[in-house]
Each structure stands twice: as C-alpha cells, then as structure tokens.
Image (cartoon, rainbow, N blue to C red; front, side, top):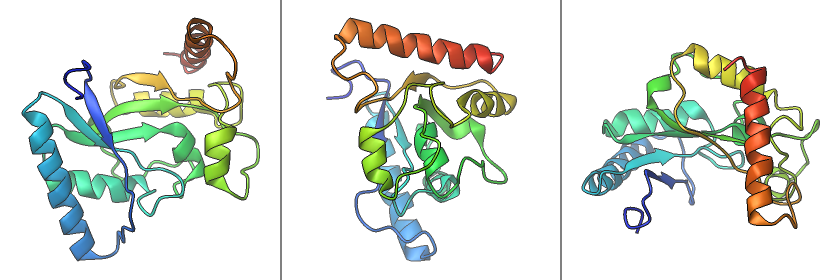
Length: 186
C-alpha cells in the first residue's frame, strides 16, 4: 500500500508493552523490526520507529537500540519534536546520538506546561511550529549541527487548524515551518 501511494517510508510505533531493560524484549524487537525492514526493502521503502511520549518505547536511546540491533540500511528513527519535548527525554538528545539514522523529523509545538494526561494534550493541543514553548528552532539547529537534516514536516492536529480548508491549513503549516527554519538559521 505504501508503495502504491508513492510513500518514501512507513512508521512503526510500539503498541504493546516493551521493556527496554529486558534483553529478550530488545532482541525480539530488533528481530521483528529487521523483518519489517526486509519486507519494506523489497519495495524500496524506509522504515522508522517513532518514540512517543506515553509509550514504553519513548526514549530515543531505546528506539535507537532496536534500530541498531536490527542493523538494516533502511531502518531508522522518526523524531517527532512534540514527543521529544513531552516524553522521557525532555528534549535532550542522548549521548552518542546517531543523526544518520534519523530518517524524518516532525514539528509541532507545545504548551508552556504539560497536561497531566500527555496523550490527551498530544491529540488536542499541539500547536503550530513556533507558536509554543518547545524551542523548535533551537532543537532544529542542534540537529543540523550533527549533519544534514532529513525531510521535515508539520504534524499538527486538534484545535490548531480546526475548521481551516485543506489548502489554507497546508499554507499555514508551511508558513509556520518556514519561520522556525529561519529562526534556526537554516
């Protein structure tokens, strides 16, 4: 389906319970991710794991351990900066961060203070890039210091663009992303 839609990649998220401290879980996850990468490679697709804030696979280092364990050239990470700020990494890149394995970046800004239910906040109060307190320009500049950025897009839903016609919403998202890039010096 991804190939027929002209997709460049597919995203995998953890939907069960993953224990990153359990070696057996890490081996099983790397094996399963590697098998998915192999299937996707037959269709010239990249596969990336997206750590998200309330997931048991929320830390970049834990997701990257699966990517590294699978050791597939088309396997990497999708870095959603909203989740990166709200998740267990609290916006900090882990030591030894491998920027070459980041295949995509998603932008959405955060409120000043997190809601007690981070999942609810994610689904309802993501802000347009540059409209919040996630320091997205600083984060993009930091990522660019590691090397060329992969494709970057906006992932905002909920109230941020509610009711806007699709073309207007796309233009608004593009303008917000452009402002963040300019502020980042990119």
